[in-house]
Image 1 (spheres, rainbow, N blue to C red):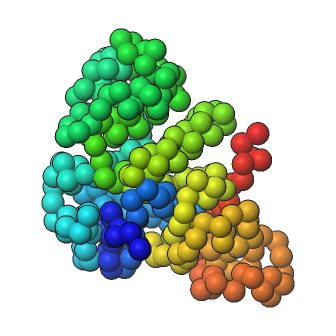
Image 2: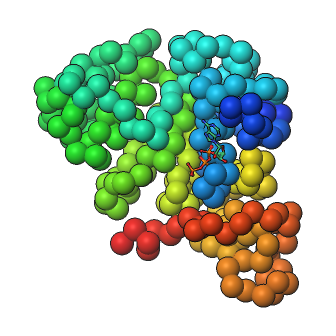
Length: 268
Ligand SMILES: Nc1ncnc2c1ncn2[C@@H]1O[C@H](COP(=O)(O)OP(=O)(O)OP(=O)(O)O)[C@@H](O)[C@H]1O
């Protein structure tokens, strides 16, 4: 088995002194997409922030290529090979596309690789980032993570507010990043799109992992996903009517406008 590029063991993360992530253990292998799913508020972003050093890790270890990083400052984690594509899709709006990439470049990071992955950016090298479309900005954010020559890239909800076609296009690129040997950790609201590109999946509920396994086990299984997200009986089915849903752990999280298992058909 390939050694994990990223390994979390018993990780707890707080937000404003409140425990949000409880005892999370998971791995991400190089050359694979590892998917993290969960309902709104399950703690996905908090977990990513903990890995990146933007939220305090209260206990547990986070290893990057075998080296503990949980006590390092965020910039040192980045320097050690951790790329983080945050939800906010931040670029330097008054800098050109190329300048945005150059300021993020380090190590063996190569602009040519980014332009090959995203010909859209190649054509707009001299354009100020603020004039890019939402999809192109997301490509630039991914490109900025890539030119830091990362071993691991965390990607948080890159599809937010983007057109369906663009989301599919970007998912293809996520697969290509893994194809380059990077360990990608992907949070995505469109569960089935993520499960299509991913190898392994971890489902978070109330800050704890309630499922870990191969993506194919959950692909297309909306009922099970729903149950994993929220606990209790799946959708409107009567309790006990779905024996396959026995892995819920019986949680009591409220059904608060579910995004559980958003399917590709919902993107049409
Ligand atoms: N800065 C903060 N201070 C206090 N509590 C916070 C902070 N950020 C998040 N939380 C709380 O932590 C919990 C987990 O939030 P988080 O954003 O990590 O979840 P999520 O799974 O990423 O949700 P979403 O899919 O809606 O982004 C929520 O209850 C949220 O209210």
